[in-house]
Each structure stands twice: as C-alpha cells, then as structure tokens.
Image (cartoon, rainbow, N blue to C red; front, top):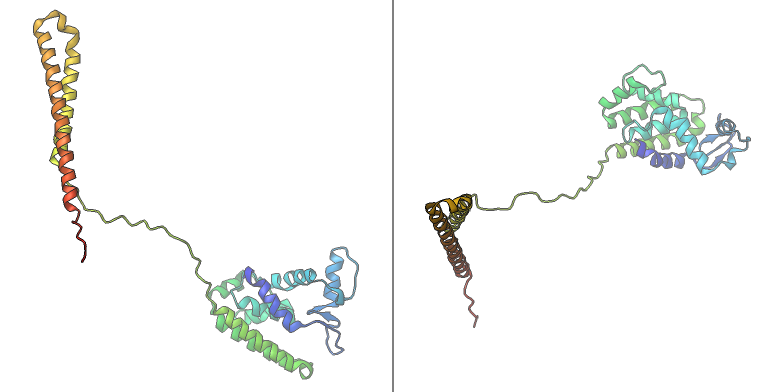
Length: 273
C-alpha cells in the first residue's frame, strides 16, 4: 500500500544499519543498505559528482529506496504486510529476486517482474499464507549461498523479524472512520389530527362572504337601470356583512373553547407537605 511505504522503510533500515564496508560482503561499501555503486549511479543520473556512500542524505535514502526497490515491486499496489515483505526481500536480494519469491508463492512462473498477472493472483491470495510461503522460500535460498556461514545468523534473524512484522501488518484492520450523522427519523406524531368543527364553519362562512361580495360587485354597475337590481345589491351587501360578523363570532368562540381545553390539560399544582 502506498500509505505503508514510510513505515516499511523504517523497518528495513533497522536491519540495514549504518555505514559498513565488510570485506566478505559482495556489495562492497554500503550505508543504510545502499551500495556505493547504487548510490553513485543515482547521483550521476542527476548530474551530481560521485562520492562515498558514507555521506548519503536522508532524502537521498528515501528516494533511492522508493525508486530502486519499492516501485519496482509495485509496493503501492500490494496488500498491507505483503508489500513490506516483498520490499524487504527486494532490498536484501534485489527487486527481481523478491518478485520471484512472490510469484513462486502464488504458483506462477517466476520471471522477476511484477505485472498484471502477478497482481491478479495477489488479489485472490490469502496475505498471511503468502507471507509465510515467501519467507520460507527466502530462507531456503539464503541457506544455499556460499556466505551463509558468515551472514546466516543475521539473515535468519532478519527474515524471522520480517515475517512476524508482515503477518502483524496483514492482520491489521483499519479503524472505522467516524462520520457524524444527523437523526432524520420523523417525530412520533398522531396519524391524523382532527380539525375542529368550528374551524370548518369559519372557513365556510368566510368563503360565503367572499362569494356574496363578488356578486354584489358584479351587479353594482347595473343598479341605476333597475330598482330591483339596486335592491338585490343592497341585500347582498347586508348579507355579506352579516356573514362576516357571524364568521368573526364563530372564530372568537372557537378560540375560547381551545383555551379552555388547554387549561384543562394542565395538572393542578399541589404543594407537598
């Protein structure tokens, strides 16, 4: 995983140690696991002069490990734990060899290149079983080297530690991300709320008043032509006024009734003795 690079690198550097120039080490002069040849090839590609690997900077160490090892085994795409185990193997024995142990453990033809076929197989594999199998193959390989008598004890300790750490990583479960939620459940309300009969009466009376007023307005222009029409207009106006007064009275009575009901629902206060 991409997020696991920094942690994996820190684990790798524990095993790699500091500056070493052991005569039995085929890699020659190394510092933090980076050989003199690898370091100066990196510097030459950037137009920098060669120098002893003793003087390598932390930024150079991180970039070299990412480019030369992590990226070559597709560390960003490998599962948690498997990424670290393959990465450490690539650092210790070369990216191609690390990839071959991965592929052989997956039952593939080991060509040393982590590609689409390898990644498809990784997705279907059990990470813990894959880690155990890879470390077993790595140990068998190291035991066959001529320098086993010199470095065998250190290699055994390293691979055992890598296996334990890789398995622990593979068993990790990402903590759930807390996402605050807003309660959206509807409030408990009655299915139906009965409308007071008085309210219906008031609404009907108001509607009737509006109709009568509209009729009077329609007849108003013709009142000068007929006494009958004039009388009808006056009657409609009087009826509309009466209806308005009636509606107002009903509204007042309904309000009084609601207040009385509300007061009845309030429990009477009694002082405790």
